[in-house]
Length: 105
Image (cartoon, rainbow, N blue to C red; front, side, top):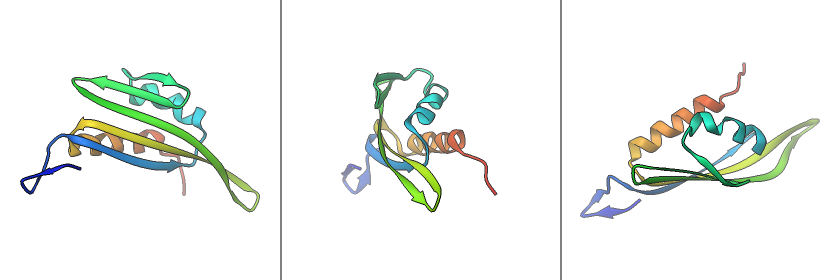
């Protein structure tokens, strides 16, 4: 994050990285719900360009995590927010968590 005169700039570039237990196909299947105006640049990159802001999502499959007989896919996802406020990033990440939440105990 950028700082000027002891204050955080309201709009800056920030990068968040998450490792998700899902395949790239599973992740991409739901992206149009999360980013209705987003588009795929290639198999591993999605962009959303709106109102002078840009969100870039980059995906990279990692080796499966193995726990006994259980195999969990691992997907590294990098979110690059350019010209988004901290609050807008938080709102987006909450939407992402709700969309990709899987049931459990």
